[in-house]
Length: 78
Image (cartoon, rainbow, N blue to C red; front, side, top):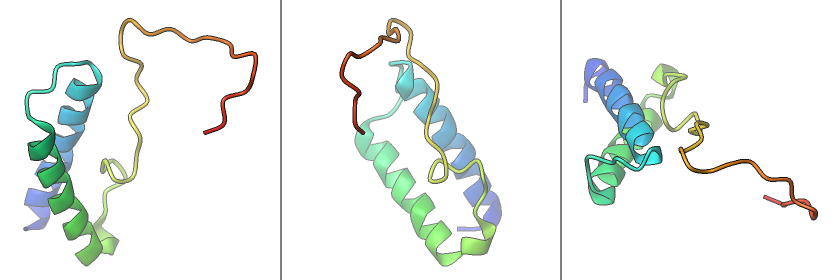
């Protein structure tokens, strides 16, 4: 994989993760997982080229519509 292909894959996986978190995944989990593994393999071989926006470096923080924040009487340990 070239660096350009890596950059494209980062963008693609970020878009897929966003769609998934909104309940609109255009691909199966198997397809996403395969692409994610390809990304991780490239990053293992090229640690100095890892983009900060790579899905391996971030967690999706957007809330899905329909969910609301609640206060727990007992703290949730995670």
